[in-house]
Image (cartoon, rainbow, N blue to C red; front, side):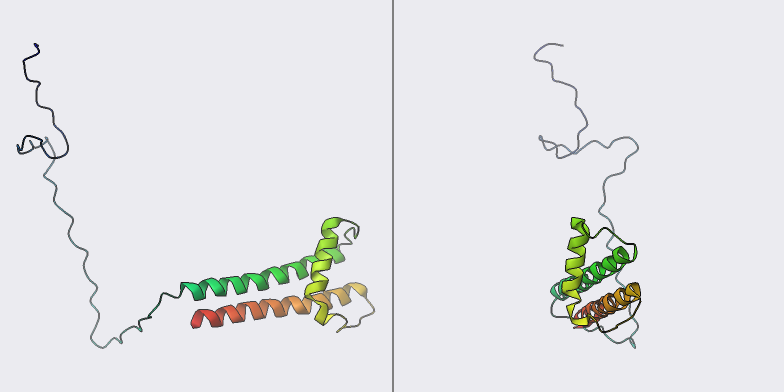
Length: 147
């Protein structure tokens, strides 16, 4: 081949810079755009959905935060009950942290139940706030989602 001989034409994807129609590739049909998706047909007697003026993502996010706070509070109280019943080392920093957090969360329910058995007393006095935090957290979150 010399420098003046034109190169053979190569197939390419895209418009031809010289304005020629693209040559069809063997085994390929020309591209046609996809058909539009069918629109759902609703019966005439079906009531219209209530349209919201906003998407409600802020309410869902707030509900999730409230529910998570209740779950974490109940988790600390439940963890303290388990650690106490399993005779965890009270000198361990982690156990001290969990105990302090549980006492701070359940201060209002301390000594509601006065039992002779210490394990049962801890179970009831820390279990009651755990159940209440779970119920309040999930109840308020459910209410927020319905707004």
